[in-house]
Amino acid sequence: MKTIELRSPYLIFLGSETELTYAKTGAGLVEWRRELCKGQLALEGGTVDLGLPAMSVAEAAAGGIGSLVIGTAVVGGNIPDEWLDVLVEAVEAGLDIVAGVHTKLCDIPRLAEAAAKSGARLVDVRVPPARLPVGNGKKRTGKRLLTVGTDCAVGKKYTALALERDMREMGMNADFRASGQTGIMIAGQGIPIDSVVSDFVSGAAELLSPDNTADHWDLVEGQGGIFHPGFSAVTMGLLVGSQPDAFVVCHEAGRTHISGWPDFPLPTIEDVIYRTIAIGVLTNPAISCVGVSVNTSRLKPEDRAPYLAELSARLNLPCVDPLKGGTKPIIERLNAAMDDRSAKAKRFLA
Image (cartoon, rainbow, N blue to C red; front, side, top):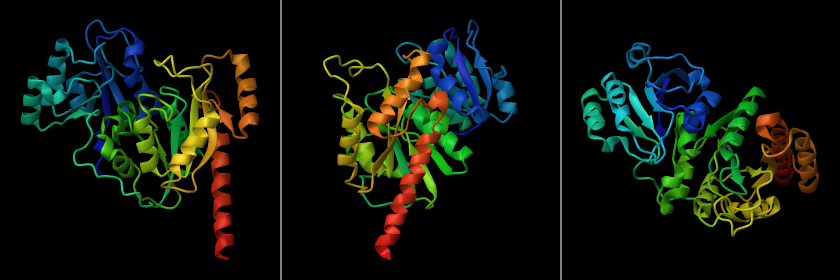
């Protein structure tokens, strides 16, 4: 499969960061894949603590660490000169360097030279694999669920991860499929869909969720927004290529306009459901919405349950905040929908 693949376990590099806000990549890795995160490395002056053991490059190499993951980003997305001594040391010790910042690791001469000598990889997760195919639209085995949103940054990645966690706890066969840089670091593999040339987005999505066993669910991380004036193209390409059997709409309570585009009101959840189905039937005529995931962080705690109950009654769908109460109601609706689809197919064949 032509996806970016990372070598675990990880040493999370925090530079000299003092604000957790700027270490969200490292924090996300620890939140969702703590078992892969074996240590953290901070430079002098750094105070961010992700709760991992402090570890030097030498200790990491001796302990079998596969990759040093840059878990923080400075404003502008570059690699500061003061990081280079440690990064070069890690490469010389045989550790891969993994980054999702704008500066390409291979464009830094010291790193490139060290990697050429040691054989360690410089992995820029924002750079997609070469020679991706055009989508073919052919039906694949296995099942797929895609997270879509009323806007960007409404919880599509976290919803897919929460679904994976909860489905596995319920004994289901499920895997998170990452389509963005932080998701790729969390999953250990994936394709940065928003960096793919537009003609190949659907083909990349097909590679992201290939043929699988009949009981297997790929939980595909959505990107952009189908009503977004700037980023709808990646959303539609991912939708067509994923061929989802089901989708979950992600939304932030209280948001009224497309973030950063104040002239564009936020679409309704109903509008998103309708348009997602209208486009998705091209490659999967059985596509259906099985729930709504809501980021309720702007609401008062006492307002969360009434808000979700009212929304659920309006849409006749389970509506949850996946980080507050989990996703079990959505999974139950998903299983019921698949059972109903199977029963209808059996009646047709009888």
